[in-house]
Length: 231
Image 1 (cartoon, rainbow, N blue to C red):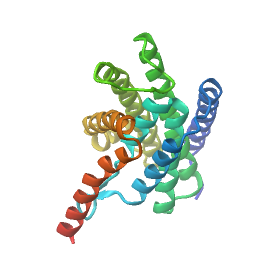
Image 2 (tube, rainbow, N blue to C red; image 1 turned 90 degrees about the vertical axis):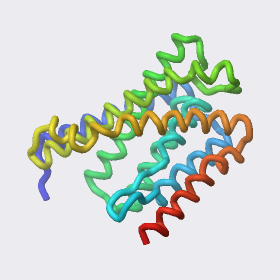
Image 3 (cartoon, helix red, strand yellow; image 1 turned 60 degrees about the horizontal axis):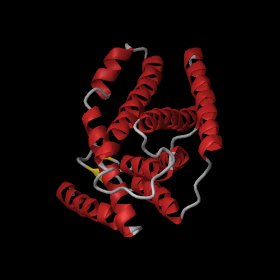
């Protein structure tokens, strides 16, 4: 099916921004090499394959806290890698391809990259580490809240604006209507997941890979209970 010119322009612009921002962040911070980051990437991909089903028609993914943990522990390129793993896994599971897949990958990288820049600016202004932390004790943990919240809000606004814009173009509906009905209520959930990510980062520093078990075990139990209830 022939795509509207405006949609092609939007997709092209987002791809350029995603590539530019991602490249600049990788050049500035470098790609961290860590087994723990590898586990976060694997956990992200897996969480997208097995979302928590709230009802027969509604599911929720818990991959976002992993993006936040990767950002806090290893810096912006790590957040890009985990986010990329999550969206690719989601696209494989959903069977999406073509221009939709290209747009979704570029949209996620754009939102994560620009939000990471906002995180770096805020954390840097507070004299907090911006390329990963070696520790996160009780004194530093509260200070990391503001950069984490800023990251989450910027990522949310960019993601929902880009997706809402694409939907508005393809379905010929007003952007404001799409955003309010589909995304306006999700910010509080996004912030809650971001705080979970900061807590996960603390757990990973304290317990290493075992911190992932502390994070996923309760979620796996909830998922199992919900599946049995729905079934």
